[in-house]
Image (cartoon, rainbow, N blue to C red; front, top):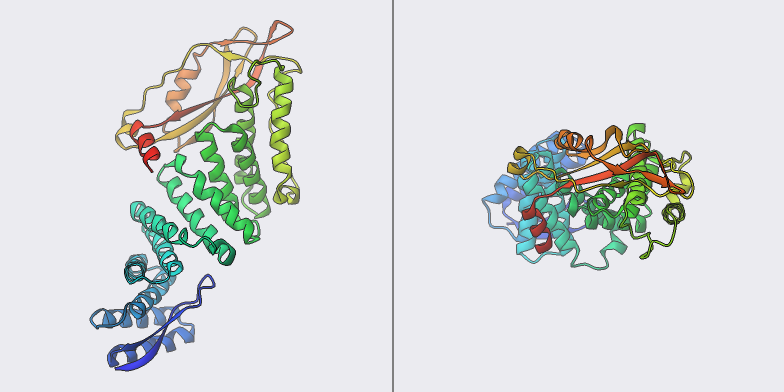
Length: 403
């Protein structure tokens, strides 16, 4: 038996090492791995790390050293694009650390990297499980946000991203907003991940029909994406959704900004809402750094007008193939309502996922009747009237309450 240092890759500031007694053959292979790693040859380091892993797998070594060896293999497997090996190695490192009572920060770090490997394999169920376990470990460490805020923010963002890709839009809010909070503690510079975190928080607000939050988060997403140099289409998309959220709140007769007895005019209520939204946006430093600002689209109603009101309820059937596949979604549609209550220029403003639910919504809204907008008691046109349609499965809603 030879005594060697089994060094972990020092990632995310987690400089940790485990000392242990290794069998002679494993120790010799580990020294060869160290030489390859120090040479900077990633492919050679992967081959050497795999040789150490295979030899250690057949040997009797302490859990800390075994987990470190597995992590080294996972790191270099990911570096060369061998995602299957990366997933297997990171998962083994995480499981071993978890079972042996290792430090929770290392448990979380290793499950986080296992989730990243599973994403590369497009194994979304394993990715979600690994990401959830990473957060469970991190959440046992209340001071982690002070010491490793960037790592924590990235882990929460990854969790939100997995939920988004799985179509679990109602589960985005908590991890997305926690990612934002951690990035702010870390003084993270504006980048795509930071902007996307705000976008996911806004999307969840849409699902919950909390349009004020949706307007704020989507606008800030656009500001940060612009500062990060994202394609202009991404910025325009986020700002467009912020405008749509403002209009949806404006059109929502049950919006929290409306007084209980409706003693305010539509114009004054709308002004209060927009002032509150812009006060929140202006308070964010990234908004002030963003040079090109996109204001919320105006609904075109003159001062003192009351908005159009939809007559009757809309009942949409769930597309059979979407229901069978367990797919949920959201569609935001816009129409122009003339002074007789007739609808024109029906359009899809935004939909997820893809255009799966678009046709059903379009077929329905073209026949909707409205009580027209009014000014001084006279009917007038109401352009840009926004409506939102959530397609949700009851079983999913029950599962959300349970979780």
